[in-house]
Length: 331
Image (cartoon, rainbow, N blue to C red; front, side, top):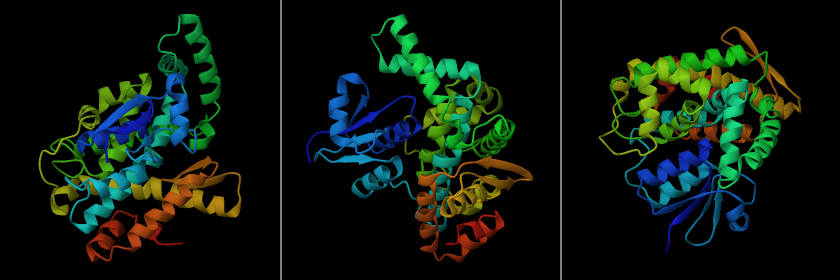
């Protein structure tokens, strides 16, 4: 194996930032390549789908999808492990990683592309990234194209006028829980980052650089903001903690996952299996409506399979106490 891994990504992509943070943590030789017109031909050599991140391995293989990328690299670069040795904690970390990728993305994407101030700022930034040497007229034209495209995609994550106040409430509740949990620890599971940190922090980091969500995080959750920045260059600063040490403030976060994310995930997967164009699920007493998400049905099945592989009775008790247990059973 010679040469670095090459990460074709974007500063505005939480999944790109997630993979880069992981490579930085593991000190994996890598090169960050901001995807753009000047490297499009090379990018297409490795990308089966037009998405970022796309990782080109030293052997010339193309990898896509942040979770499988990290799992693949973790097998090659196992130390320091991102998985706690305790099987119960390792699963909880994987659960939070999936939660970050799917539910955290909903919170970030809605706030980035809903209010005009955020739409304008995000479209302008993406236009500058794609045209780093473009003049103001070229950038304005590109920004308008991006604005038109992205504001039409909110339905993919359930963003609408009807769900906007619900999504805002979901974000505020999550930030309040994380703020307490991160008050006296650097990472979600202790002194070093776990799988779950990479999934969730990347989404909230992206939210933190946008006007509306960024203002909320700065004003309401400074510990969360510090964690997001810490995860850009994560370090091994100590061991993972025990469940007994984590429980007082992590259990409420898991209860949030059981209250919102898992019922939503299950309803989405069922709607997809039934061929429904949209679904409605009651989350904490409020009806939430959106189209089903095809990719997430696969990742939910993978999460359930991961849960089935862990026989630790402590994990069953933890999940049951958080209201997560039944949602993770194979349907």
